[in-house]
Image (cartoon, rainbow over all chains, first blue to last red):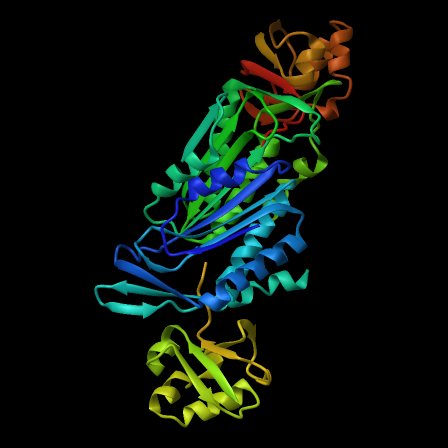
Length: 149
Length: 149
Length: 83
Length: 83
């Protein structure tokens, strides 16, 4: 399990290569990469604020929960904070499992929880000013689908 | 849309970097990488046979179907044939979308169809001889879940 | 008791600072917010609609009725938008 | 008519070759397989259980009842195991 919180840019491919090549028993690797929305060209920068004392703890809790629910060989969660440019990678999760379905479901689960349980807040800057990204009801209710099963 | 069929090894990270950096409008990139099963250390090599005249056509049909069903910005499907070593990457799919759910679902769909609609056959070689990998009923029925919706 | 109170995102911007130490006898987060509102317009604006807020006690998400006893750090912020 | 018949994986191994051209009047794949079975034990072994086989006509998956008229290439193989 690897949890990374950083302001520096990252290359999703470099991380995926490292993650894939360290697998000894997995048959399936799924990755999700989130990119900064460009707002049809209007976005100048995105600023991501976080709660440093809580961030690592929250990401670890989410990753540990995924490991408890699915038969995973490995999990990676990386999230950036600070200033980002349009189309830059914001965050990445990767899961490795013997089973394809487990790798897919766990990655999907991690994303749902990251969206509404990890202490990050996005602010978008355009020529017209800046605004905090609002959480959607979808994001907040998405986690409930994992509670039913 | 990019379809690749090759016998040469590939690095999933190199492909993911290239795929991610060419996105201009996507906010979500999902990748799936399949690795050769090691059979608890017993596997010596895996040999993948394919039907060259049909392979490209079948992969294109599957990728086009995914593009028709989901709002995708880009799709990559790569599949190897020939001789592979344990834990080597066999194949990879990547999807890019403005929407996270579309990227996840389309990647999952591509995998279900690749398993039972693309003309590849795997043969596993161990110290005790070689055997064709049997298709599971699960693989053959997995595609039906996409027909209901 | 003395307690550290942290604010993030637009809650921080409305209040005008990210962290302060308050002396309080509040039993719950709801009580604490009621006290803070009495400090002025900035606070009332930040805490206008508490259904739009989330809270963590000692870095664990919880709800507004959670007891403050033994807690060292309260964080109040909008719904998170990571991922 | 002359038709190319291709075999893959264990079907190819049982028959002993990957491709042959056959002269046939078979109307469907089922008819063609009946003709091929009469060629000998190798073929009967390969086509022992047709529920374990899949077929493509001119590189498109189809079923055993599909008409062969106008078809140039028939491929017979086990269920695919890609991915």
